[in-house]
Length: 595
Ligand SMILES: Cc1cc2nc3c(=O)[nH]c(=O)nc-3n(C[C@H](O)[C@H](O)[C@H](O)COP(=O)(O)OP(=O)(O)OC[C@H]3O[C@@H](n4cnc5c(N)ncnc54)[C@H](O)[C@@H]3O)c2cc1C
Image 1 (cartoon, rainbow, N blue to C red):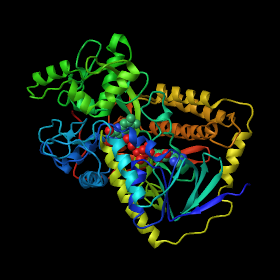
Image 2: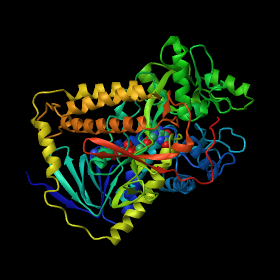
Image 3: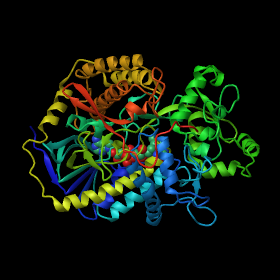
Image 4: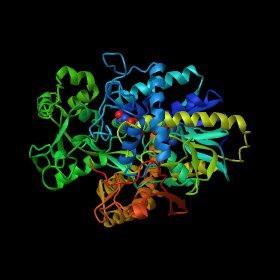
C-alpha cells in the first residue's frame, strides 16, 4: 500500500455546514480542531436554506418557548423525545441572539428587533392560529448563518481542510481514533488521527429523483457509521416538502405561505381549507399534512390541467383577497415580495419563466429532509443501541444526526435551530472530552481496508455505469418509498435495491486518474445512497402504522400502543436487523393531530 500522510488533532469535524461550523467554533475554544469538508465550506447546503430559523422571541406578538415545544412535538406526530425538544426550543432563543451578536444581518422590524414571520405548524397555543416565529434574513437565512459562522471559525483559528472527502471512520472496539480522507485535488489518502470525531455531513435526499437537496447530499456520514457498526435511527421518516418547483424539485420556501401565499388546485379551490385537510391553519399545516393533501388532490384528478402538480399563489391580487376575506388588515404588493422573497422570485423567473408577482407557481412535493440518522444524546454523543450506550469520542450533529427532536415530521425552521443549538452543545462536549482524554494510538494500516475497496472499484472494466444505477435507485425510491407507501410498494423497492446492490459490485468507473476524480468519488457516494435507500425501505416496511411522514395506505392509523417507539437499524453482514426504544415523553400526551 502507498504511504499515507497522517495529521493529528484533538478533534476532527467532518462537514462545514451550520452544524459542523457551530460545533467547530465551540470545540476550538478548548481543543485543536480540524474541519474536513468535501465542499468549500460556504457551499454547504445550509447556504441554500431560505425561509427562517425558529425561535420564540415574541418580537411582534406573544410567544413562549413552551408553545414552540408543543408545536414541535405535535408536528413530530409525538415521536420526538420531549427532553430534547425542550432543549431545542429553550436554547433556540439565546442561540439566535448569539448569531445576531456575531453580526448576522437579520431582517428587522421597524423598532429594530429581529423580523419574524409565520411558518407551517408554528402556532399560538391558545388560539391555534399561526404565530410569527421564523427569524429571517430575506429568503437567504441559511446563507447568512453559514457566512457568519465561517468568519467566526476563521477568527478562532479553526484548521480547515477544504475538498477533503472522508471515506472511513477509524474505530477500534469501543473507541474512535480518527478518519480516512481523500484529498480531492490529488487523489491521495490522508489519515486524520484524533481523540474525537464529529460527523456533520448533512442529508441524503439524493436517494430520490425529485429533491430539493444539493448533489452533494449523499449520506456519507450515516453510511460510514453503518459500515462501522453504528446503527441508524428512525430512517423510515423522510420528509417530502410540499412545494418543490414542478419536475425540478428546487425548493420554494414555506416562507411564501408564511407571507400569505396559498395552494390552489386545478378547480381553482384553496384546497387546504377543506374539512378533511386543515380547516383551521389551512396552508400552514405541517409539511406531511400538506404533501399528502397535494398528492390526494392530484390522485382525484384535481391537479392543474389534470397533471401531477398544483399552484402556489403569492400574487398580491389573490393574497390580498384572502387577507380581506379573513378580516386581516395586511396587504402585500410587488415591492414587499421583492424584499421578502427575492431569491424565490429570481428562481421562478429563471427556471420557470414565471413572475410570481403576476402568476402562480407550479409545485409538487419534493424529497427534502431526513428526520432519522445517526443516533445521539442531547450532547451529540453517538449511541450504539436502544439502551443508549455511548461510543466515547464519537459525535454527530445537524441533519445527519437523530437526537430526536423532529420525530416523524420536522417543522419548517427547526433544522436551522437544530444545527446551532446541538452544534453548540456538541462542540462544548467535544472540547471537554478532548481535555480529559489521551490520544489513543492509531491501529496499524488504518487506511488499508478502504484503500483496497477504492482500488477494486478502479479495477472493474466491465459492468454497469454509475449513472444507470443511480437513476434506477431514484426511480424505485420515488415510485415506492414516497409520500404514501404500502407493503407491496416497499417490498418492490427492497427487491429492486437488492439487485442494484449486487450490480454495484460491478460498477465501472471510467476515469482511472487521481486528480479531481469526481467519477470515482460520485460512485463511492452512490454506494452510500444505495445503502441508505435500503435502510429506509427496511425500516419503513417494518412499521405497520402511519405517523408523520411515514404514511401507509395499508395501515392508515397511528398506533401509539405498539409503535410509539424509535427504530434502530443495524447492518450485520449483508443484512439488516431492527430493534426499538421507547419515546421519551414529557408534558405532552399523544393526541390525534388536528390542524
Ligand atoms: C433548499 C433548502 C432550503 C431549506 N430551508 C430551510 C429553512 O429555511 N429553515 C430550516 O430550518 N431548514 C431549512 N432546510 C434544511 C436545512 O437547511 C438543512 O437540514 C441543514 O442546513 C443541514 O445542515 P448540516 O450542517 O447538517 O449539513 P449541510 O449544510 O448539508 O453540510 C454538510 C457538510 O458535510 C460535508 N460532507 C458531507 N459528506 C462529506 C464527506 N464524506 N467528507 C467530507 N465532507 C463531507 C459537506 O462538504 C458539507 O460541508 C432547507 C434545506 C434545503 C435543501
